[in-house]
Image: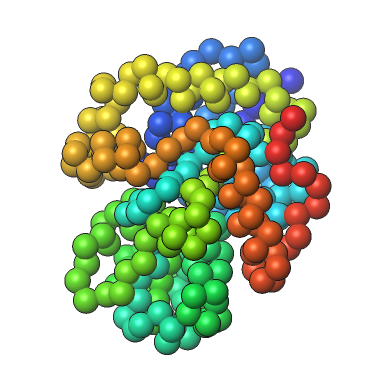
Length: 265
Ligand SMILES: C=C(O[C@@H]1C=C(C(=O)O)C=C[C@H]1O)C(=O)O
């Protein structure tokens, strides 16, 4: 049997979920591990080049045959500082939205919020950071991950932190990404995914400075980001939030209706 191909997200926010995989923890079956931008993780899973991937929740409707592991993911209940809608104009005046091509979740979330809260449905154009270049072609931009953390604090822009906006709107945490897997090939590595996060918890103080250096963030900011802003264990509230987000997005025509259940098991 060929090794199970596992792909993770390359941004700082995913490091706690990936630590044990990077360290090469043993698994009952052979596996390979690599990282990519979130949208690419979804593509690799859909094309069958990976059997397990950390995928944007917003991509799940377009991943037939892929189910989500219900216990681990990238979630937040407050400002993340790494998933931003920035604008040169008040949000009710946005006509063109530059969408970070790495994202499949946050672009949908931004469009949902723009419609529900500000009554606008801008044209969406694909784009990539830096945010200044994105805003040269559009009034507003969605930017995620490490490049968004570099934008934080930029002056003169309207800035909306999307997880906090969702929390204020729906009263639930927001889940950006989950482990997607293609059964039965991916099933054998589920304990490895748990072990990988456990490894991060066990080696946290050693790993934090390494992650900070690798992603160009200060230790204090990395600690605040990964300990206080994001969380990685999903419970009933998070699973309900995923379902609610996908339902709202499908009702608004932003994603197709998902065929079949979302969750593994
Ligand atoms: C918290 C984040 O969540 C990310 C956002 C994603 C998206 O918008 O599709 C996908 C995966 C996550 O890594 C971030 O990028 O900062």
